[in-house]
Image (cartoon, rainbow, N blue to C red; front, side, top):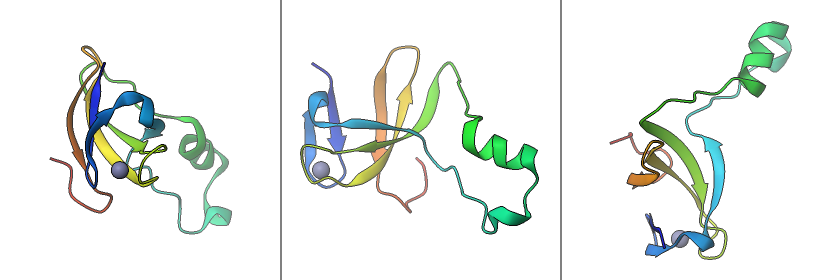
Length: 89
Ligand SMILES: [Zn+2]
């Protein structure tokens, strides 16, 4: 079983976590002023790299907090986890 390290609770089984999509996607400050193309990109376009990918996760069945993780998409291993607002490792 894959263990994921919650920044607050420590290593826990993957069944306690939920995937939350790509990390560091910033909502436009004034959505009414962006073009349709930019709004569509914000809503739908995400990276799909082979290798390190920064993702948002939630410790759903634990502390319920969101955090960020760097996951290798080729090997499906979590390389690092960090709190929101902290710089990526
Ligand atoms: Zn936790």
